[in-house]
Length: 168
Image 1 (cartoon, rainbow, N blue to C red):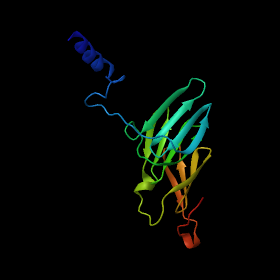
Image 2 (image 1 turned 180 degrees about the vertical axis):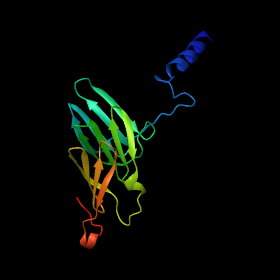
Image 3 (image 1 turned 30 degrees about the horizontal axis):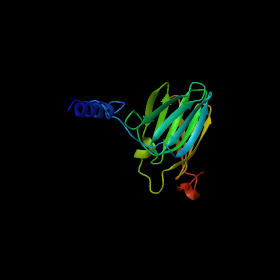
Image 4 (image 1 turned 45 degrees about the vertical axis):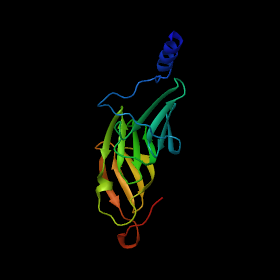
């Protein structure tokens, strides 16, 4: 009998999970970060955009931090990343044309392009930093994003007669 009791007690104690489940009222995500879409190196730290979210890796400290929609990003399915050294801002572009600015661990959403009624693709194909602006090449034309005011400064439709044309 004591052997059976010890066996049951050890079975219960040894099969408990090593780390606790999230408490009631707390969220915990279990997302895949396995497929990199875009990489940006910022002062030795590597930022990686994936379909699930964003993470960074610091090779000197082996620190890894991740952001998801659950932990503060405005969307999923990152299409591209760019970094403004002058403004210490990471620009995060999503496949649905939503934009986040990550500055000092604060996320600022700029949903203007996503909300705009445009026929055809609004996908952001690439991002170039020029001074105080991020130039976005999109499925319909070009966007100038002011990084100081955190707003869309202007939109250019460069197709024939001012029509939409995809810009890479």
